[in-house]
Image 1 (cartoon, rainbow, N blue to C red):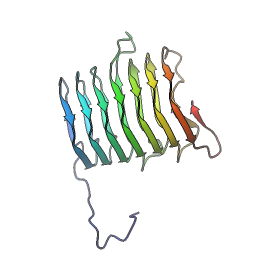
Image 2: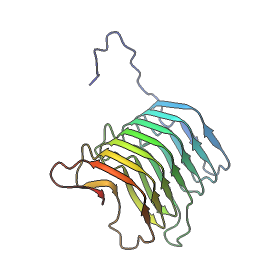
Image 3: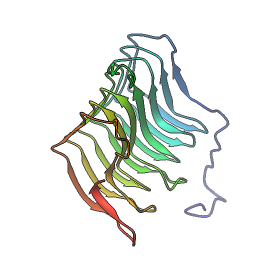
Image 4: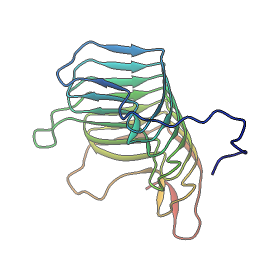
Length: 207
């Protein structure tokens, strides 16, 4: 529902899917300082690439999978972005090989993520999966579900501030991971987590 009568305001309807796609097979590309907004897909997708960075962008009005998504490849990063008003996820990173424990080396650092999952009860600030990933120094609040979801072998989750999450979905936490016996070596340290909502069934700082 619109926040006000639409008779005298500008209304924008997205007609494109992904706005920026890097890869597969790209390397040493930096996308910096852009306003990335109004799409029906993912704002920025980095796939099967190496040493690519998405930095200091403003990503919002995203109707698809995530504001920024990094999948496969190695040593890519999302750094210093503001991501908000996404229908589903804020940032997704996936990389590394769980069969050989080869690290992906991807990082999500110093991003500001808020008002995530506005049309999805499972909207999380950051979703990750794989081996050897780092999520650090992010500020996350106002998400429909977790601040951070997922994990993997030898991942590091540190120095994040997570608050006012779980606003629609319960049985979750500020940081939610686990459930797989083979996921080992994860380090969770120096995070500040508070105001994790709990309506009836449960909301924990670390789940």
